[in-house]
Length: 410
Ligand SMILES: [Zn+2]
Image (tube, rainbow, N blue to C red; front, side):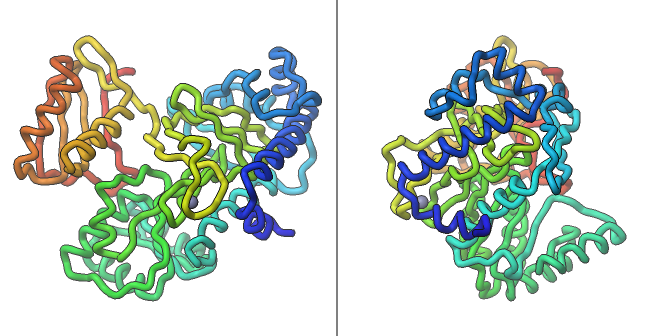
């Protein structure tokens, strides 16, 4: 059976079936790792951890969490010395800018894709269906040509520059497409332009999927107005593979066949059961998450555990006169304003001096000013002085949207 067929079958499994499968796969995986990864052999031994005695997922807690810094530092020894038939190179950047490079085995690659494509099937979308892709880069004609060839193979078209004529062309192309995906902040920006310039059409989209970035509630209304659907969320990373996919009921279900997710001090730890070439075990991805109650049952009927919210990377620190704040607090702060006052704001903060922060807000002031200022005062007291500008264009379309930019050393 292919991976996707398997994932479609296990889609209907009970919680017990999923947990039994995870436990069995986890034991096999840990035994493999112990045998073939020089680093993890030592790591398991040092922690008195015996894969042969593994019977229950709770036993994973005997191992300390692993960081990206460690994956970079012990890279060669972590890579297993098993002779895989096929390996793919993968790379991603670390927090301090170093590159993490590793090899992925075939199963890792296919299993990750299967988890994503199973999610597509929940929306009646086939991977080969015509699709529009939005990302955050302006690139040269020459570079664009190369990508266009690859896109053609995947029945995909994308936006290469944010000029009015290109956006119009993209909007026209979208008419024959089944799904739209990409950076959620860019989907939002294009939606605004489509609404403003009357490009709106009768689209036949079945799914709009945000990747690589948090999907903010403040994007949804504009996107729905432009394209008829809200953005659903896919959550994962290069190291962890696909972790979760949002179901039509709006809940992110964990791909439990591939990954084990733990929540520790509000942060996610991931074990990737497919990562035999470069083991990812209790890996601290750096995101703050909120899991649903273990007894929660999603109306869609799937028994796969639910992540309620990914609040994003802890991020760099906002430095007050006395205290320091991880920038992820901003998400929580603005979400609080939405809950309390029903106001959705898009924001970008810049800090160049201790205790002073410039805050750009996309929306016009419209009487929001006193509310925002009052809430900032409640939250940060006198520790940070904010300079607020309303009606600002916060997306520079040169990559992902950054909500906090600092020149201070963390
Ligand atoms: Zn569901």
